[in-house]
Amino acid sequence: MQQFQNAKSGEIVLSLADRIIENRAYLSEIDGKIGDGDHGVNMAKGFGMAAERIKGTDMSLAEALDTLGTVLMTEIGGSMGPLYGVMFTQFAETIEKSDAIDATAFSTMLHNGLDGIQAIGSAKVGDKTLLDTLVPAITAFDTAIGSGKSFGEALQALVAAAEAGRDSTRDLVAKIGRASRLGERSLGVLDAGATSCALILTSLAEGVEPRLQSA
Image (cartoon, rainbow, N blue to C red):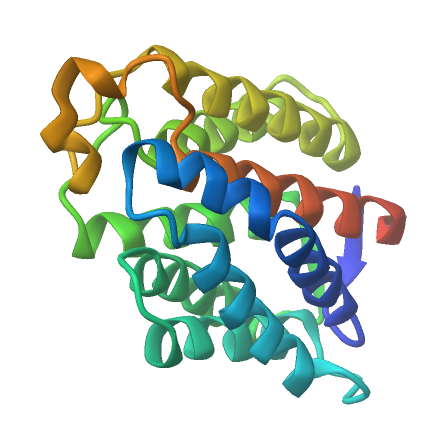
């Protein structure tokens, strides 16, 4: 059974922040086509602020995720701050008492994050939101584990499904938020939240995979 250590894994969140900051202009460009155009700016601001607090602290993954979630919930504007904030806070609460995180704990963490998002929003799969990335990614991870794949292989399945979910939003009509006012005109464009969610899940998987060890 593969697992990784919670302690000193806060660097995973630093890499995640770097990925969002690197894609700030891209995310805002996508958002500008059917939304407010501030998604990348707001996300980069929040992730950057959290990274400054995590750097040099030797935080566990749970502590770093909690730091990120708190910043996103309380210190940045936009509609995505609370959604991602609650997701990361739920991630942190799930694993805060775990020394080692195996595939079962990781799956529970993902599900609790999803539950947090769904508790404060009304979106569902097919509405052209981050859920079109997150839900299929979690399903793919669980399916891989259920079929006997290793934790590492399940992470690869998660990434592939996240990217496919992101790409699926190009063919969806927005049902939630500002983009929903455009109706059919929202077709043909990626959803910014689904795109940032794919970046987050990919970076998370890439951070965990090299840390995996056999128990």
